[in-house]
Length: 407
Image (cartoon, rainbow, N blue to C red; front, side, top):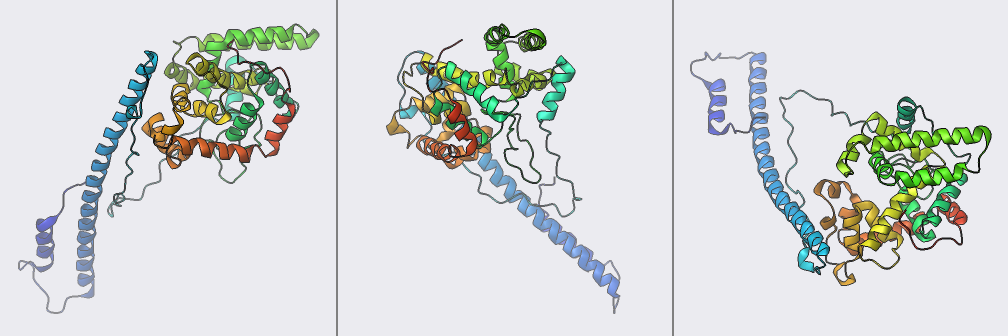
């Protein structure tokens, strides 16, 4: 990309091309010669304008990026400081947060090079979908998840697992509504919640709580022994072919657990495994009527247990629990434990990295903590009125839910 301006030199070149005394000038130039001179002049003018706009854009973009880099660097520094204070039992203050909103680029758009050939827009990165998860499970583990006979059967299994874990009906139903659009099926995937032309998956997030493939791998690595215990208990009551099939399922889950533990218990390592064919096969467990509800429940339960372990003694509201689901347990709890008086002042940017913040339209629109919680609650109110949420509420056990337990 050429960044210099043609300036005076370019103007002289153009004049020389058109008026040079070294070139014979016809008394009555032919129309073709006049047209050619006009095209040359237009080309040089367009090129001059492009270079001028490019210089303006480059300067504006560099100013913005320097400002943004500095802003997000301070956000990260203050986040690490807050975490260190909490680990040592110190109190935080508003000064431990960045209290200004992130910079927004407001300069000119990038200009189009008039001399560059037209190019096709870059192809979007392919995001695996349910068919890919099923194919990977069959290929890597010779396994096909057992689907529910109906949506309500999966909802009953999920509600039973959630109630046994100590989650409340309000938490479960409202988060289901928020994450799945209020009427999502057990196999709903992010980007494909609603039937529309050219719909495409935007991530591997799957199911009632929109678990990513990396979540599935991590949950197996960390809680796989508990899942096996639950499945073994269920197998006791089975007989004949049904028992053999269920034991085969348990054997597959054991193999998946073993694979998930081939790397350190670290999110980045689990994410790398999730992007392999075996990792995608593990993600297919969410579609199994026996294992899927355990995975979907455990993700929420882990957040509740994390909050309890770090000093939060109350019952998390659905919106507060969703903050932990949305931004990660540490960032979410940071919001939850923040004094109410601060929530109108502290920008939501404090709880994201730059890329995640810019992709999250809700967080960047509801740009302080109080607004983000309010908008989340408002959306939950709307989605909880839809049929899927009503069905889940109807099958949630009226008794049996108690204190969240950590298996």
